[in-house]
Length: 184
Image (tube, rainbow, N blue to C red; front, side, top):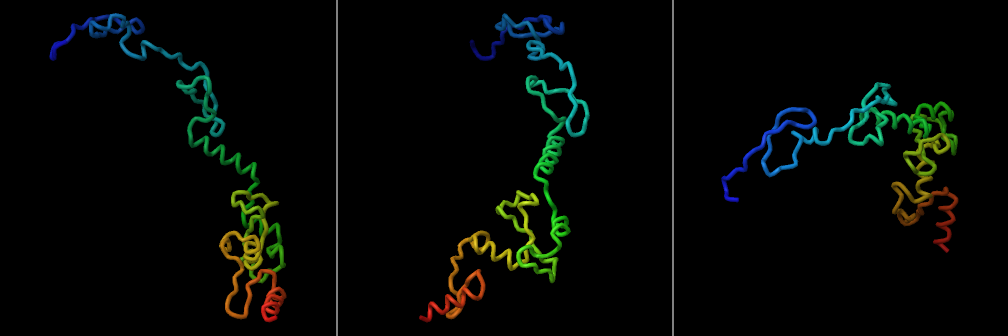
């Protein structure tokens, strides 16, 4: 068809809503004015109650077979965060201090309780159950990570510092034995 030539338009009434509309003559089978009239969706019959805020809301029209449990993503996040706290039985630092007596659980040091550190036994920071936490002084905490070669000591292989001193996490007796072995 040459440029600038327009097909004649046909005027009809919509089969769904009864409103007048027009379409090109080439659309012979067209009976509706819009997609909404051609493919009407049934209105939701019931309302759903949000699990977090307990407000009633209409389920989604896009996925009627799988309705949402929350009226908004914000309510969903709040609910899931609350569930995670219940499951993990998260312990805060102050509660741990009062339960454990405010002293190091390895050596008993309690001179300055403000510097005591919380140590995760399985080394997973997100696993905050009482069974997984220890209250340690900075020395015991550093020794634990040094022994397992993790944290700041990941690449440290116990190299010697200076000419006569050996680095050892097991105390001065081991360092003396090490120095004696070198002198022999």
